[in-house]
Image (cartoon, rainbow, N blue to C red; front, side, top):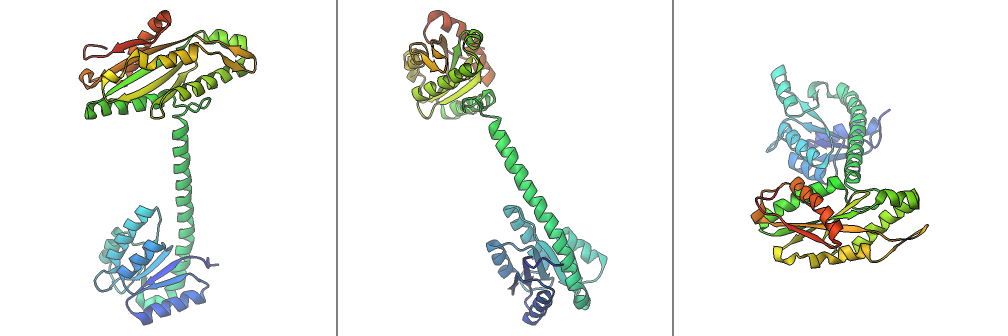
Length: 322
């Protein structure tokens, strides 16, 4: 049985021919039939609404069926669609048909046997179109799923902040920005001490509450354009782009240290005081080239000094620093 909702576009500059084709298809049960009197008319209609099957005369003035097929394939690529193209032809010979297949034509109907072949060929196109559309829909679903998975792979599920992978991407982007815009950046590594004892004393549920609370407090402390990340249970990070390196001083980020160390966190098990350290690594274009790993490793090495000093520990990278 035919699919009555199959979208068919008949393209023929001869009105009598297109009328006969439309009548035959309507008698076979197809209801969504449109008509175009030229290839350009057909392309305009397809731009507004794609068709499942295009029945087109090979020989038409200005733009013939082969050129029409090539342009349909361009539209299909743009709109992630597939239109099944059947040319109506009086051409004979394998070379002509092979050339047409190379242009993206799907099938042919010889005008000499139009009455016998039209409906069976459209039936076959109908079945193939159903399969093709299902494949395209599945491709779109898979693409959306992969995009969603990729996004989740960049986000820490516990806090909603960016994760380590996301930081590495953003840090690489920021280093390129510093180089091309002659600007500066600061990378701040925030370490939480004694997380193992915190988990043991508070329990897993309360420990996760603390992690989420740290993320919220940091978000309330930083500027909206600054980028926060949770790297693991002991480390958070902040990435800040600056116009000038002189805009970055330990005093500028003292608030990060104080918001974690001076005010207790409330959990379902009670109030908890944390001990945190902040290592600040800054650079401008004069320090390049540097890789994201160079910057991150420098901050890791600096963090013990931040714990010991009880304040933001700064480091300005230069070309000799690794």
